[in-house]
Length: 77
Length: 301
Image (cartoon, rainbow over all chains, first blue to last red; front, side):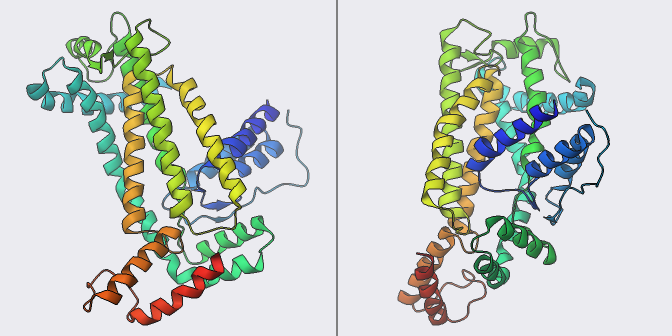
């Protein structure tokens, strides 16, 4: 499941978003943030990505915002 | 899910029925024109509501003029590392509390409305019609007969055998693909500060848009009622028009369209003795501007 979602995100990055002008206010972009978050945190990563997407709004100034990766990631299926 | 969207069903159906009631005396209550224009009206209201956000974005793009030296520096410093380049760029924007990028919000904000319209129209297309929001049974029956160029607005490509519906769907899908393509192409060719992306990449992107986008629109479009496709086409057309206006009148500093406008203005000032007031912002001396422009252009090429 995790792999599937990440694959969808990569497909989106390669084929869909690459043909549009860049629009994300953050670095890394919301989609790469989501891919990293989901790879590392599984389901929690989905929530993190949703929160990131909500923070990327017209009233934010964006900026640099990496996924915080803990040393030990618990057993997440 | 449908409980969350319920207030939106009410809002969407209320807007549509209100516009429909306003238009009925002109075009007739059961007329497809009234119902189609109601959907167009919904788009216009939503896009007008989103204009302040767009203006805000344009303003922060203009604020970039002041940051140009910094941006050039970053571009030079991380010439070979585009990732680092964009990272530093974002840092710079944040420091100066300005960000020219649009974020996904304007698109995401429209998604719930889009799905509400989908549900409302799908209900109309059921046999017997199912009403949503503030629509009465009479409204739903009337809307079920409404036709857009001969195709009932609640019919879908896959849900019908009527040739007219299929033709209208295909035409609308072609229209949506064309508007998306032109909008993005114009933005990338003229509207953005020049990046050192190669021509190859640009061609690649255009190919994707030429082939993949019609495909995506087609796959989703055959499942959507004609009315939803009207919404989608209209909102695309609006995006195109809005962008066309901005690129012509108020382009992003550093973009090809901006340089073109500057050249035009410089030309105007050069030939006419009294330059129009208010057309230029910070530059007092046209001569200085002319000198500043030349090396910039050469460097880019």
